[in-house]
Amino acid sequence: MGLRFGTDGVRGVAGTELTPELVLALGRAAARVLCPAGTGTSRRIVIARDSRRSGPLLEAAFAAGAAAEGVDVERLGVLPTPGLARVAAAEGVAAAVVSASHNPFADNGIKLFAAGGRKLEAAVEAALEAVLDEVLDDPPGEVGGLAGERLGTIVDREAAAGAYVDALVASFPPRALDGLVVVVDCANGAASAVAPAALSRLGAWVEVLADAPDGLNINAGCGSTHPEALQAAVVAAGADVGLALDGDADRVLAVDATGALVDGDQLIALFADDLRARGSLRKEAVAVTVMSNLGLRLALADRGIGVVETAVGDKHVLEALQAEDLALGGEQSGHIIFSDVAMTGDGTYTGLALVDLLARAGEPLHELAGRAMVRLPQVLRNVTVADRDGLAAASDVWATVAEVEADLGDRGRVLLRPSGTEPLVRVMVEAPTESQAADAVDRLVAAVERSLG
Image (cartoon, rainbow, N blue to C red; front, side):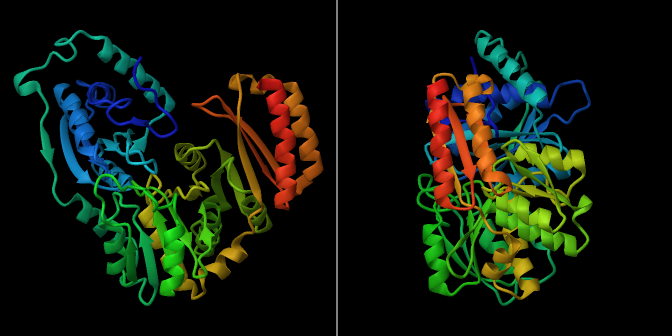
């Protein structure tokens, strides 16, 4: 049994769960599925990584596997995931990034993109899993069968990060951020050199946190999962805004001048208003996941902006954007996708777009965010169960859900869903007050434990 794809590629503890042997086999499988011989598809893969210690090891293993299948590999070095996706889109090639995103440094993962920088469809992931199992089952020496000039090459491409910064800067008017003070937390990750450079070139005065990756400190007490230091730094500096990236810089959260966190839902509300005012919010709608706060839905409804709801995961948001021809979507976690710009969340671009919005609006972020939406209190609890797949048929649970929903009316929301990887049921309630949400969660958790515990 090989690796299995989660909501965003494969992940595990590097060296034990995600071993070089497994990643080499995944490189072979990716070459066969994403770059099949004799089909006219480009037999080339670009690969990048974040700043984890295990990155070069696993990058080398993946590259070796792909090259053994006759695919040419270009290594772009440390580069944000959206930077790699841009290269794949521009050049029409497949791509792989070695990263575990916001996870601790000991973890790592592989995210794959089909030719043209597109996230993989479920059918392609299933094909990759099947071929990976075949590769792992093949006897040594029989997995590839290529030799000599039929083997692929592995080369390093210089200046990929600089080209990505150039592309970001070119997306905005010259000096668009003049006069604004920005604190950016790079999470000691892939954007440590990229984000400060782009902000500075566009005219912002920049203070930088967590931009000295050593292989061990990625996401460690910093970045979008630990924004406390950023919040303090924004207040201390009297800055206009703070930006908190994660390890591979595909997401961002913001901090206003008061030190308050501005999450992905609030950013979507702000960008939806801004895009509509500029005539760029196609179909007057956005795509968000089931985890987005009810306050966002209510605020958008009040302004006549529609919502397309998706499953959790930015790849599902992207699918909705493409299917509905929408310009904007995202997640509460800070994955924001501007479909006219990119096919994946880009934390650095989103941060630049937010600062540009502030520059044009001439108002502080806390005032803009406060008008954009009011977050409803949200309580989320994970319940350990014996049978997570039994949730759909648990009639007593759903009877309790109906009772809670009737009590909350249209000013609250209930969401129950099984975890995709753990023996858990996730229970979430949003309500007008924290105590109402907590009481409702208590009732639902008790019902889940009675029926599934």
